[in-house]
Image 1 (cartoon, rainbow, N blue to C red):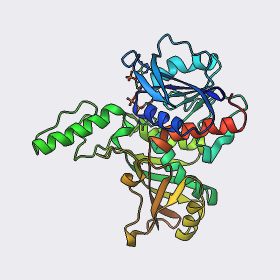
Image 2 (image 1 turned 90 degrees about the vertical axis):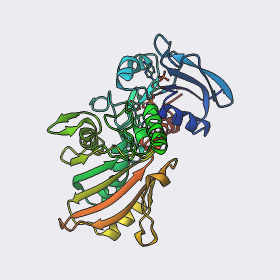
Image 3 (image 1 turned 135 degrees about the vertical axis):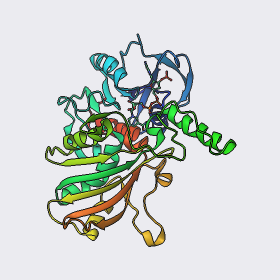
Image 4 (image 1 turned 45 degrees about the vertical axis):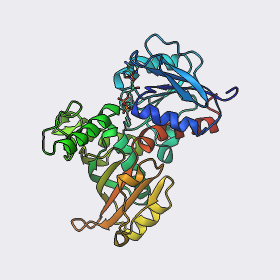
Length: 341
Ligand code: NAP
């Protein structure tokens, strides 16, 4: 590690942090050093990174000098408290939390869609909400063909979207069910058992009955597509799936798009895999997008209730494209354009 980018991962012991570390091992660009940060709970732990034992540092009081890019995934409050001082010390911060996403001064970036939103000297860059990224990867190629006016979407969100504790909660509830079928399971992360259940509320209700997660899908879509008129009406649902979010979407476009035209646009889109052959049981499923870099789209069909409506189903790994991979792609693009290190 002698030349290259000096990388930091904040929240290195969490679900998204672990994915960042896996991506670092793939060396997406030359890396000179890696620093790891978490809370005092994990400080002192050692993690193998690029063949070296790296000690996790306590973020509180840590000196961020000498970092080129810092990937933050430790929650909004932590980003608000610490990201600005990393930027002041010279780092470009790519933030996975929702803290700065809607700040007009902060670019909110999906590289396949709006890499051009990043200025020449980037300070803070926000990674969008994971469900929003999965939806937009399928929506944007169609939007380019015929502007999307409105979206109605229902999500099927994996527990890893909530973090490491939620993965453990689903595992322990499944084990408890096997040992004592039908017994009520203890729930700490979610308000109800998530095993063998679906919970039609992701985060708190904030606006006319919509939850924070649902409002993010509307507001972030508008910002990323630079289209304040598009409407996204979402119902976000937590399901007992470990990994990968899925979304059933209905869009209405400015002019009618036929199924074949939609398939062509999606098949040509980078980062998107068309998996749409229901007769052969081929359609997007979270089990098969887990650990995969591409978003999968299928079940494409015309909507009977509108002459300009189209329905599709999309699934994608929200820890990868919905979080760490998207952030790493942004960093790689900055390196390629000479804006990092
Ligand atoms: P997680 O598994 O709960 O991990 C949280 C991480 O933050 C851990 O490394 C934890 O370290 C660290 N942390 C907590 N409090 C801290 C503090 N006071 N100071 C420093 N570090 C602290 O959560 P996650 O799912 O990875 O999510 C992290 C962030 O990414 C959240 O903002 C989330 O909204 C966002 N995000 C998550 C996903 C997803 O699919 N999970 C997708 C997109 C965005 P300790 O080991 O010390 O506790």
